[in-house]
Amino acid sequence: MPLFEFTCKKCGHEFEELVRSDTVVKCLYCGSGRVEKKPSVFAAHSQTGGELPPCHRGGPGCDLGKCGSGCCGMK
Image 1 (cartoon, rainbow, N blue to C red):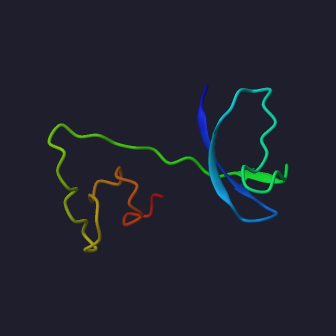
Image 2 (cartoon, rainbow, N blue to C red):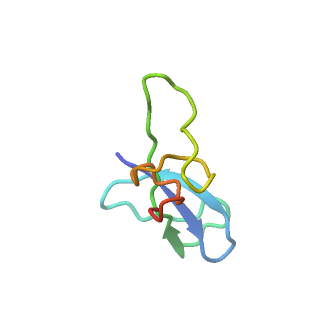
């Protein structure tokens, strides 16, 4: 089952939930069914485990347009 992040549109509580395709998601705090799935983020792993080099604008990430740091315009 995939893990998704949600925000309750009634109380603003953010939570994670393991969901199947037939699962009706309700807020874990107030019980409202008015929830919105948050955009997914991904994790990247490197063999060195080190920090990403600074980009050409001085922010975190690379200047190759593949890091997703937002520096190069990718988000």
